[in-house]
Image (tube, rainbow, N blue to C red; front, top):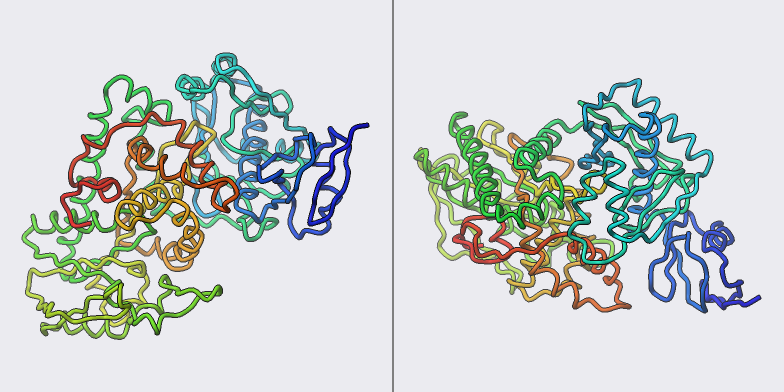
Length: 553
């Protein structure tokens, strides 16, 4: 029997050619605190369904790794839609759509006249548990693209049929679970038995699929509704449906039909209308002197603050932009994170005492010299930027901690208007493959940082976990306290970002730690037809990232 030598945890061991990686991981599972989800074979990620073919160096990825966690989520969704298909008696006219994430839950909405109630959810959960208990095998088949399209069309998955109309490759990987065939973007666990931790919670017209977070792979937390976030996401979904662009395939259809210019104009108009509504609410409240804008990285806060200022000016207000970053403590006083690096994301990195003194003095009619932070020297400077607030003056303050009342503890609540902004992507790859909002923001940041700072894609990917950690600690806990939520995502933007992001991602080399993420994003961008940025309005939020904005961004 022919054998291969595998190097695992620094030790060599022989296995027969054709041994499954699931069998091998079972030998080593006791050495890991979390379930092994994938292996790397000579630097390439392999599913556990794969078999040993040659000598290789092997490492294991668990559910606590980012890639492993995403694999768990993807597999849980497959088990869920298979269970729904069984409960519905294989009625292809009724479908569900995996819409968006709220915390660690994924909102699943009804399609095709399906009614979701507690009885239905209970049946689906019971069927999921049966599939898990049986350890139903998940098989992957490389299928001819045309054949795959026929399979999807026959099963009522028109969204996938449209998606693969634009596929350049001749083959598609199709996953099968107990006779149910579906397509998923990314890796999959070998059988349903791995999906031990989940819950289904009826919510609104659909339900939440609750799954563990990456840090606690065996714990499913209770669903905590976030009404404002949910409303913003559903509004975006409604807009996309009215525009006839629910999935990437729909967007590609519009591009091919020459209708993208209309999509751009309508989307930009919808955003401008929303900005106008927020401005009117600020004015109607009366007594607002401080507009506090906060949101995660690459949400388009700077462009939004400029456009909001224009709208406020149309009501006779005199807006003045202020960046919280100008109140950074001197570099030498900046707190360090657990790795010994400067932690610019924490509240202690801001001189909140001076900020509150300055804002209180301005509110009381005093003239204040505002600081400017010099990022090269790492020190605050004063350059004669004096401000005095009159009756119609209003400060538009942008910064990561804007929603945290500890940031503006000395200011009366009635003097503040808090806005949460984020790029809440509403476009799906197809009805079972959602696009995480973090992917859109990561691509935005990558394109902007390459253009404005000369940063490589490798560096942006390298920094992203730290950025995300800061968001989770300092922004997301306060999003529901905002007076208004603004969604800065534009349904067409990934088709525009594609042409800028792809060359940057191709520069990440195999063997580099960031290569897996770069490769994943490149595969993701393959779904989109690329379009030029030349027809974007000069005040578009997308211009903040690709360049050509009329604002100083």
